[in-house]
Image (cartoon, rainbow, N blue to C red):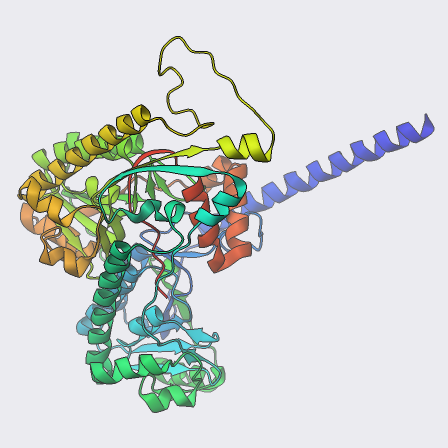
Length: 590
């Protein structure tokens, strides 16, 4: 009995201690949030604006209350918003306290279109002022996206042990058919579109000829665009660049990279600091004042203009109607946001920023309807980010104008459905059997414990065909083309932004800033202000809305780093059951 009370008291004491620690930690976090909110950002004279391209590049960074805290179970991969980058560069060009831009490079934390938008913003920065851009890599390797970005700099400097990973573009696709066969799971596929390859990982053990064709076309488009940009800035012929890529520069460190002409100099960190002191006019060994883009974007503008004319910038990022612990688009919520803007006369135009590979047909159709209604009443311009494919294109096609980067992944006009059959796994592997009682012939429609009947397969195929016809009809109406024309470039095929312009799926090249400027031009607005929607939750809302799934996702991102994308991809693929308008796969370009 004595031992029993001893263990009970020890348990109670432990729970009490953990509770006390939890309360103290909570107050510390709240205090840190309040402190950071009250702290005013000051720009020191002779400062360098730092753009850390190793962060996760997103359209707009969330209000993460844990960003500067070393709490692995709460903090997430640090992000940097394109909106902050654009604002910072625009203000820095006219700010006498900022003497130049320091590009911190390693492995680029975003997609190909993000690289293009940042690169264009840096080119514009150079046009607006004579301040230098200093690109520096001192983290093992500079990947190809980072290098493409670096080529706009006045000087590219790397550490003696850093190499430039210059070898051409490649993409990899995972196939699960053999693994599923081993565990007794059959993915029953119904689709429309010979290029709709989203289901290939479940059907095949390698790419189909059609899929290989579309991937190669896309990769060549991206690579040729990159080579042209690099050639112009580095004065290296495209032919020589291709030769360097064929020879593989990945393992050529330091001075060898200088000899190829890819970079300018090899320097250690102390020598780089000397360069920055020279740029800023700092003498001796004093520290160079630096300010990050995310902090600099919060500095109040010297001349704060107010305009009654508002342009709504509505962000749509992630899978549509599909939540896997990361960003996703809720069809009802996004539709409600668009509806509010449509009904608010203070908004003169709408810019819809789309970064989505697609998702469920239901949510895509719901959003499309509100976009169509808004476009009928107000100027509506769509800006494509890294990817706006399948459902991402579906929700955009009713816009007045569509802008995209040459490197955007788009198209994929097609639909598919997946119904898993766990019969073999249950019966043969686990020894679990099932039995059915039904009142009508097809009452047990689409059960997951047996193969589909021909009747069931035909019903699903009819649904797929109806969905595809609706999709193609919306695109034809929105783009002013015939159904036959859209069908010929549809069939689930993925296109680069460059190819998409040639076939009429987009109107012009441009990023988010260009889309906003175009909307203002169409409306004849000389003065206006933008309002980002949906409104970002404040740090306290972020703190108290966190659930177990959110914490788990944050923890896994921290632990797995770059490999998290494979976990996320498998989770998405294995969670699919139903009818989707989604891109064939998640493309990761080295």
